[in-house]
Image (cartoon, rainbow, N blue to C red; front, side, top):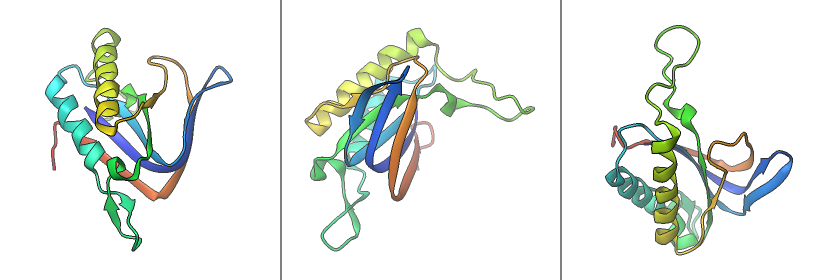
Length: 150
């Protein structure tokens, strides 16, 4: 699993001209699911995101996780995070999980993160053509790959 995590002041998802989800201050998580991802990847990644200390404390130091700030979260499935650009100029998405594998894992990820945050997590629509608007705060953008735990 790969995630691009962005600290935001606000974000929204629009599908076919209609706003479907929006959040205030918190995190936008773009989530790429690989064909060999497991429930253990979900557990590790959701825990890491919930405890990631990237929000400012009273002294303006990034020292607080979203679970302490009460911030919102928006999760959007993004298979293109598994693009391989090794050969040529057209990306290959061979490592990205097929929808029948990815969608249940995506739904489990959202449910798990929601449980850790103690509040509903907003989402995009799996497989839909979406427009994501966000205001990156900081900017703070973190990349995490469950296959490359640093």
